[in-house]
Image 1 (tube, rainbow, N blue to C red):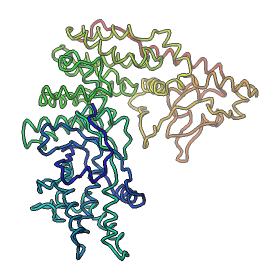
Image 2: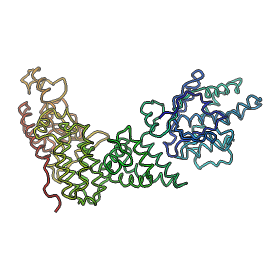
Image 3: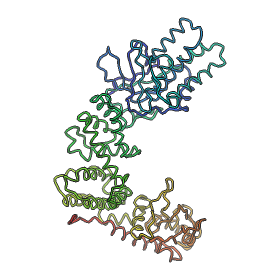
Image 4: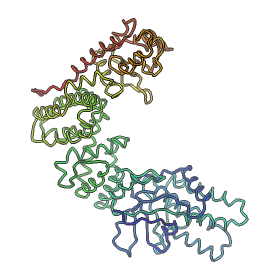
Length: 600
């Protein structure tokens, strides 16, 4: 719920008669602005008229005592507020060193001082930065260096960190701004007025979840906090309130979760959504929503943390380790088959099933599961998602519900029964063989490139021996070394040699064939070394070599190309025959077979 929204000048936000303190959550994102942003802020102030609009900030106001120091938790806009405060500190430093200040100027300096610290509590800074990378201590050291705070020690190497760099940069810019002025004090007062009259929209909300709701509609200059940032801040705040002085220890424990999940925010957010969805039967007594989504994630985790923060963190550490294994970030010791299967599930975009796997990994003992049960389940899931992603059946919107239902209905089963239940339940929600075959015979490359690549690579890998094995998923930069190649070119301008070969010189017929057949499985293969065979003739594509003498054409030793290198030409009939052959192989490789006995 929004408590208030007002557009305030900086001088009001930092009113010297108020007891307002802006506290950035201790383990919020560290101060990251650099020279580009520092100059942009100062130049905007200098180049525009008074009352320049700087953006917005979001604060959580949970104060109860109007007479006490009012601490606002600054959850968005912290980069901007920190920079403004550093700029004011630099102005104060230059101002205080000006000679012969008259009474009015001394009063202005006095007021500026109490924009940086409270008037009634001179040891209380108005802004309390987050602690990461020594931001808080460095900022306090800046205030100590200019004589605003007393008895502040500077941490080693502070001069090499961003807060002091920003302070020195602003000092340099201000001195340059005053360098050729006949009246530097008046010019400095003009700069201070620009800062004081600049405005910010201050939005006060009552809770973290209210703040997050706003982030998706506000477009501030800074990068808004994510749901994961806010979950972390809430958790660490509760844990520290229960164990004063433990913030470093608690942060390091939280970091285990993030390290396990990796740097990809999409993966982190998906983990937290899928955790609730996976374990909803046991969590709905604490917080009950139909399904965890991006928009209600904060609401869910605020309640889980409030119920038992310590237990929650322990669970997250353990579950994130499971998730790291599931998403193939970490190889499973002595379980190469399971690791390989999980990697294939990731490649076929089977992420909706991760919520099921989280439960199987976590409840393995209670469900009396052996490793072979997990392997059998993942094998089935791979087949399921090859078929689902080829046909789009069932629809994407139904997948989370399906897997949540599977989890809830299997928890009283054990061993083989668990696996058979999963297979039987998913088979009822899968495309039929007829639907699967129809999709495979259609323009599969156009409809789903990921499925197309997966099945072609899988067919090729199934024919590899130890001597002929190559990594078809190898990357060079962000591009696959081994790429999908259209035999009959896919480009709009069909080369003359292909018009002649495939349509006896009839350009209109060749275009009709292109639209009907070019993206079918039978017209696709794999070529290596990032080669671009493109619009070359069929003969060139067969025998092409790169500058290093490597075979990058169809004569590259792959099974998929064996039927191509013996052909002298390429026709629609050959595409149809090869499509039928490959479709049969794919369907045989990915059946939905219900196991009778899994473990021996």
